Length: 359
View 1 (cartoon, helix red, strand yellow):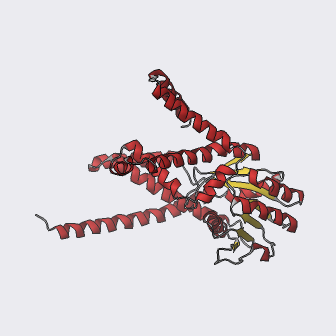
View 2: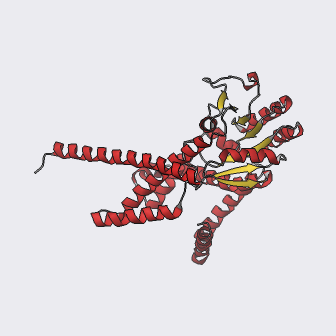
View 3: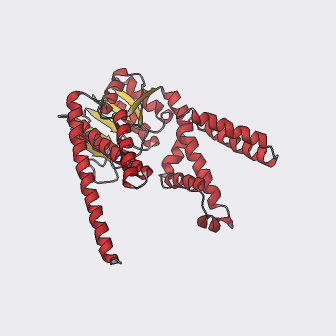
């Protein structure tokens, strides 16, 4: 029988070979991206991706291991390759060469993302943040002679900053990245009235996002269409899906997209945490559905609770979504308590039909 340590050494060597081939694949992906740019083609080619996955599944079956495993690996490879190509395309476009950008709140998670994003386009990025390790502890000390100013502060602070920026009338593009827009309504209006090139942007992704393909970025026109076009241009080299919305529609929609989903998970883990004697047993048991819900709930629980409170409390339309959630839970409880199987089935079928339409 082969020595266990020797087998492990062989396995480590195979792992090393795999990693070397992955590194080669990423280098080839970068070259492919350059060739696509030269031909004026989009980085993403869904037909080619389908061929790659089908080819991989066939190879896995031939080699005697799970085609599903091969597909999972290839999906990860494709996403990593696209991230490399997208990043290279942003750098190659160089839209910020010779220009300056200021990110107010640039030491925060999303502020940091925008600082890196603008720097990758060639902007000379300056950061203002009282948290330290910034070019300015106070953004008011900056000359504001920047081509782009991003306001990435908490919502309440952002509105005050927008008002102060309006008083100083910077010449460059100004936009916030708030998850809600109604709390910023007065600050955005002040900038418009002051003649500032202002727009409002909502990136629908987190700070750890590398690949923007399939991710949504919402652009809100607050009365300066040219400013919206400028903000859109920043994302033109990426594969992000650009969405236009007015301020009121944005917050009404976000009440469900963010507010409802956050509240649902907060209610879920609150019910678990306050389940009393059942709590220890819950830690020992699981099911596929329970674990999937736990994964989402863990992510929500790890986020900034102050930001999540703002998303719930400061949205003019927030109580509408919370009311809908309350009514839905009460309907489920009612049909269960009444033994109304047909009513329960109707709820399930209604949900299945709705979710099928979102594919």
